[in-house]
Image (tube, rainbow, N blue to C red):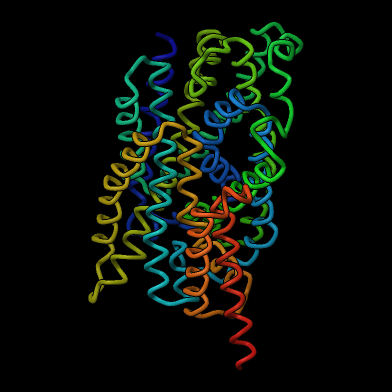
Length: 457
């Protein structure tokens, strides 16, 4: 009963935040970037809360439970890219003072058609990654409340849609900060309590198979390890919600600092979440791996503390889900609808249309979640629609390369071609993931055209 009260108060609080912050949202710019007046700490908190979703928490514990600590090291690829974005990309974002989406940036450099394509791809990747979070929410509600997975998915998604629709990015950022503070305390607390519950670190080590502590176990070769590391390195790089986080401060130094702290924070977080999976393996080897982290919370934590950590678990998932939901909605209106409109829409209509699309994307996310059970598998699948097509043109433009529309389409052609060849032949033969080949193909064709154009000039 105590845990139910804690959870109810938390869910009520974030809905209230959505209602209160919604009063300050007057147009699609407010809905997307919320005034551009946030501090380094807020950027650090909202970015961290956004990427630490179901895949990097419950999904991480699930994979470590199944395969060992190698999964933690794969995720360090993500940490590395966030740090590199902070050092090299974030300081360049000052030139995009009027941008509210990735499509705006792409459109400025490559034209209207490229902007529309980016908008469509933004919606697809956001729906997929949102699906991963909603799927994880289904597991959490199933384990903690005994609800069927589909009902957990529907309830969790409905709450996220409600507060993010009401308050847009202002609600997303405000709830992200609250959710970040809860998870930053709750997840390390879970690991400490679980180790104590298992009889100490020595007892855990004695019960976990030795193969779980090797980076190249039977399942992984050096090439497959590198493939997964690179997949997480490029997969979520500058996906739409993270680009939005680079646009919510007017001072690029603040943006870079908050982003850098977020990259550093991800390293110990990935370790802690993964180790919870090992403790679950030591306590109950026949457990469904998807329930590794929820099982620890239910069995190792005292009442009250477990309620706080249940809230942390739901916070992790909601904080990521709301960000991708908001980005998808804004991309549909800003990068697709407004581009095709021959007459301008007033601010109120733009805002209402952005809010209305939340429901559509939420439905798409439920479809993703019901089709694929593993949240990390949903993440990797979603990456295929972004990195091989958009990453190279986006980074190249931000870093100052002189580009045009033909660069963009040359890169997409190369990405699609090499990705397709990899899916048919190369991936199995070489051992690298299709997404890696797709990014390489985009890079080669993009810069081949660039150097061809320079020589012709």
